[in-house]
Length: 303
Image (cartoon, rainbow, N blue to C red; front, side, top):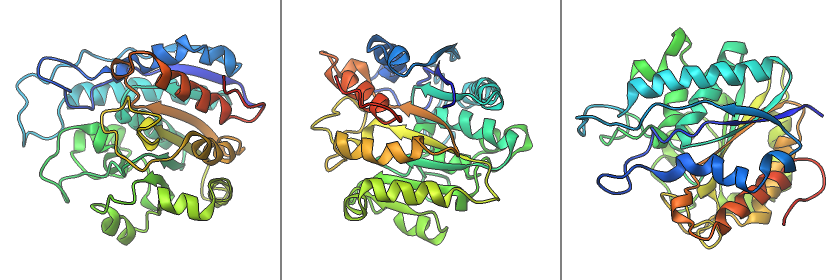
């Protein structure tokens, strides 16, 4: 079993303010999961923190592109440096966000090393880009488009490595069945999307096993797993910025993640979007920690 390393990436640079004069609370995700002893429960080494820049949109206005772009670009490179080091060492990084823009750090790191796939478990495709939307700004809802080379050059072409991910190497899971906005475009690009309904129809375990096998091709050096807490139903995970109904239940999410994380070709995981500010009693954070620990091979760890 590869050595697991827990690395904090507490960036909220990719989300809009929840209210005027405030900042998104997802930067507290890592601290909340550590309070649930996630490092010890995973049997992981301590990877420390990649400290993000201050959240400051300055005089940004709608139409100016992605806000916090310069800070995001710098942070993506810093995070990629750390992730790359762990993957090169044969370790398995578990990266605690943060918002979904931290996935760019993982994708850039792996692009430096070769060609890797991505299994994204998320309520939405995060595929907003200038070609399909006028409301560009929050990288946390655009990171999949950015990682596949769609959007402004200062984020899509860091180190001249555009695209960090090829369309055909991406798999999306857990999108809400009601979300149709990106479905046609993604289908045309041959990016597979399995909605919550599709996961239930196929069976989470069988689907994940088939996906892990599909990544086991000579052209790929491995794959990464991106987990957004909003894939869960708000009845169990209300502490996210967009708590859309009809999501996965905890046992379904564990069944989906286990074969992916247990694959010898999986090289890392990031966890995003859970906001402790929206979870006064900490119960949603405790559940998320239980799910992450239980999703790794070994005894189930639900408290």
